[in-house]
Length: 113
Image (cartoon, rainbow, N blue to C red; front, side, top):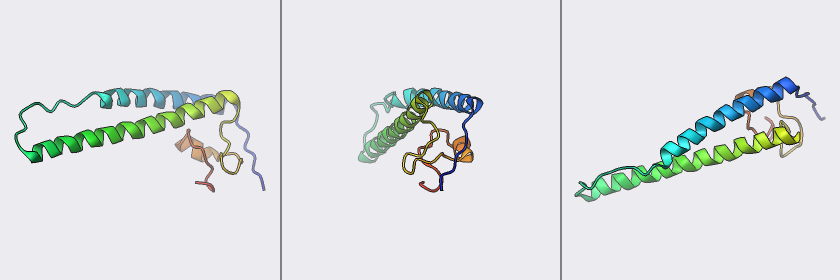
């Protein structure tokens, strides 16, 4: 059985504001984390170099996760503009409002997550 929850203009506008705010925060975090770390040249042992490599690897992983989240948010914003926002990509049912209020860029309903 299909469930239909009407997305009001106000609901869409509220979601869009949340998404734009989150996008701005994520872009700031990406810029901050893309700056190359400054380790200095005073590392004389292998353990110090390993620690630096681990730190750089962790930083790159954070940036990758942030970029994936940014892509999800941009996709949700496109869906708002194109009229497909709030529709599950898997089952094509509407995504529950409580899911969208917690995760406005959600691509799936509760059942399909």
